[in-house]
Image (cartoon, rainbow, N blue to C red; front, side):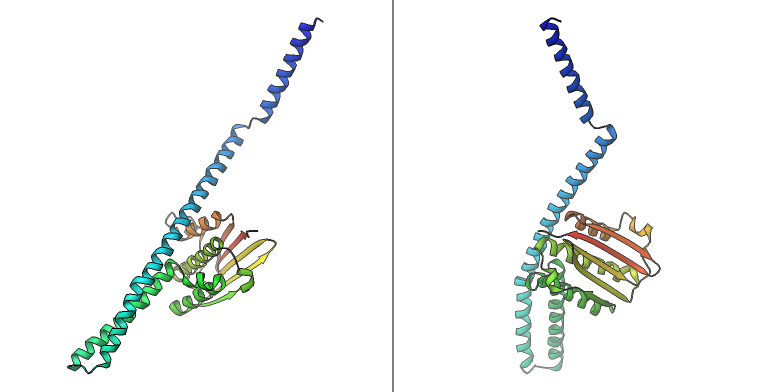
Length: 255
């Protein structure tokens, strides 16, 4: 065989091998659709996480403004009202009016603190996640009369702000749903570390969530919880039975 023929045969063989390799590496239509779906999901979760960060920053800013400006103003007005109440009033009707104003000022201050705390809990910044969850548990018991137990170790809940805020919001939303829909008398919140993961379970002894409830388009609370968990690469499972509802969350801890 002449050199030219040998060169042509070698070229054809190399081309055939490259074609086979490219064909072998090229994904099938089903694999391509799955890869595209994974990419879209990853992009949506990244967007959700960025938007949630923006929302948390806005909540923190508004909470600070409410507390520092409006809160201080109301507190000053109540001090002035207390001074007026110490002075002899012109008539009983005037004293009754000032007493009512003082009570309404106190109610406004209490409402303002509650709203600011819902926007951005000061306990989360001042005492950490464990203290914030204890405050949330206590407020839940006081407002709704439902016994709530927190099982956690403070040393295991020293986390970064992103993870702490997500967990707090998830527990907060869970308790809100329990108060609105579960008709429960007891709630148990448990958090523990194991093998680089944080395991969170929230149990109640209410009527138990139905599968149809979880699939409702208007279930924004459940949707919000799922997206918060997914944003920090966690898993969430919600199950209901006649004995109540369980929310089980598994979150990878940052190294």
